[in-house]
Length: 403
Image (cartoon, rainbow, N blue to C red; front, side, top):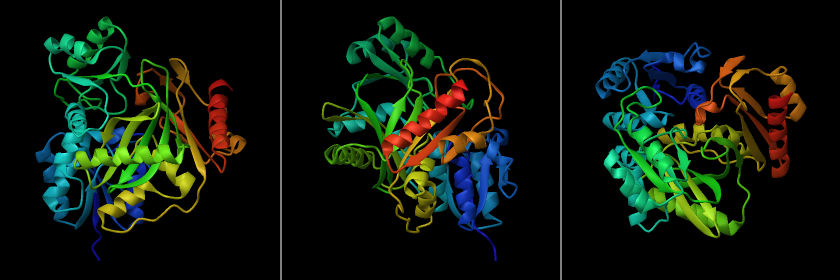
């Protein structure tokens, strides 16, 4: 019997990419990774039965050619990606093949942070004041419109790359000029010049995880020191009043409806302050930051598997347990050589960890980027008591840093 293919156009490098490959295999599919740079993904070397196809994934024509070659030898059951940067390409390819997937137009709208903010604002959803900056001539007008302090971010970015808080006009001008001068993304692909200036919203930060317009969880987010926005931890399910949860969920679902993103996963980031909810941005993908692993350990619900089952038209499982999970990321405190003080197994045993993952081979030479690339690993603790889960993960992190 001919097996069917599950095609992945590139992958995220430190999150759920390897899980997507494993879950596709568990579903009886042949996982095929289409990539320009296989060496980017450590999990490739540990997957001997992974079908690897190499091409210029920045070229729609090149990707189409590879996908069509695969279609001549086996049926293609699903086509997707776990990388922000290839969401539109994957959506286009899935639509071309008649496969289930999100709307390419909705993906394009979500990925352009300026267009997204305009659409949400016009629908009456609370979002930060913002102004798109396409040229140097736009900078002073944008500052006058938005005010300071503010956030500078790329028009279309990922992983907090290029995102920074600016408090003075000099800082804002320099940060916006830097982004306008950036001509490639983190993978070296050409990008359109542009930046977004957004008002800074104080408050607690959460994310709502959604699949096919159904909420699958709410996450509390922890960020590193300003002026950057590196995510250093998450707690799930987030602890809050039923009233606040209902308000957060309502606004998140409103946002994806306005953006016409009814099909597929969404990761809606927002902040709450004095009873108000402000949508920061809608990402038309599964959560990053190993949040899917956190949910799987805490609740028994596997978001990665749920996404694949949705693409195949299969029903998803429901949570099987009601524990609480905390993930904390290993971010070295200073540049230089970094290594673990003792074997991972001893750290796991000492703090009762559910998971301890490393994204690099140690020892490593660390250089700070002030974005997701600063995270070189994570620990996850699970407990019936949310405070205990947080304490164990944070204690393990402190031990790793200072032992």
